[in-house]
Image (cartoon, rainbow, N blue to C red; front, side):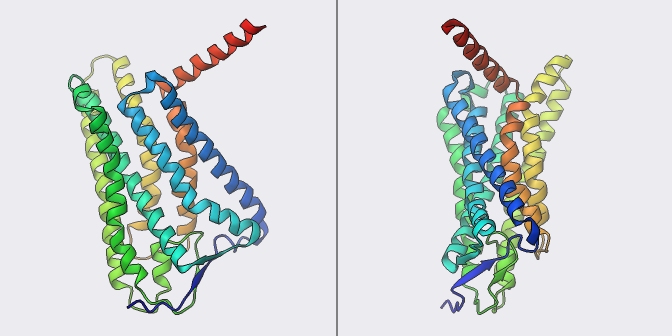
Amino acid sequence: MNKTFVKDFILLAFSDLHQLQHLLFFVFLFTYVTCIVGNISIIALVNSESSLHTPMYFFISVFSSLDILFVSVTVPKLLCNLMVANNIISFTGCITQMYVFTSLGVTECYLLAVMVFDRHLAINNPLRYSTIMTRVFCTVLAIFPWIIGFGIILIPTIYTAHLEFCGPNIIDHFFCDFAPLQKLACSDPFASSVSTSASAVFNIVVPFLIIIGLYGYIIKTISKIQSDEGKQKAFSTCTSHLIVASLFYGTAMVVYVKPKGTNYDKYLAFMYTAFTPMINPFIYTLRNRDVKKVFKNIFIKQLYCKQWYK
């Protein structure tokens, strides 16, 4: 039986930075709006341009959709906290936020692995690529990370939800996460902590090792290409993904692959919860030849239309 006495929690967020509350609000608002607009633009571009109707850009559009959901779980509540000091979240709301946020994070980990698997096939099996990466297979690969993410996180979530919380109820974070919540438990959080750490290793380290292994094969194949132009073209399709994966996994590993949280976790968490999703669209557009070509064609068309109407 759940003996929870605490009805709600107080999210401290960045209340220790008293003089910067309003400045932080505008910084986070800008980050959030930029992230939403940027990722929606990527989705719209991929859907509207037939030249981008390929498996790689299909996965990029799914990744952009995931980023929109990912930031929307935490940042709007943070903005309310900073602007109107609405820092109270109910017990049910806290557990729900923790579950959805972590599930989306795990989904992102495995989707990044799926995206590098796509590049692995394209570079190492170019002749069979189109027959393997069918629409049905791409859809299955895109759904697979969501099933893993929302399925496996149920276990640590249930363990944490059944801990006894009798006070204090102050969470030193800007959203509900496993480590800060487990610190407040009156009952022994051992099982919850172990399941969380095991889940972190399985859901962060395993896909990360898969990515490293696949990139090893990709780099080995690219190194055998004779021409410099061929090498550059092959590697250019991977660099954007490699940058995004490095940013996301780097901060996620520091925060989650360890037994206990630290006072700096909320600052590191901002990197992968808001900052990385914000810059992802720019990485995929500014470092991608196909997307830049589409943007160039759109600009030329718009310029031509304006001149024609004149």
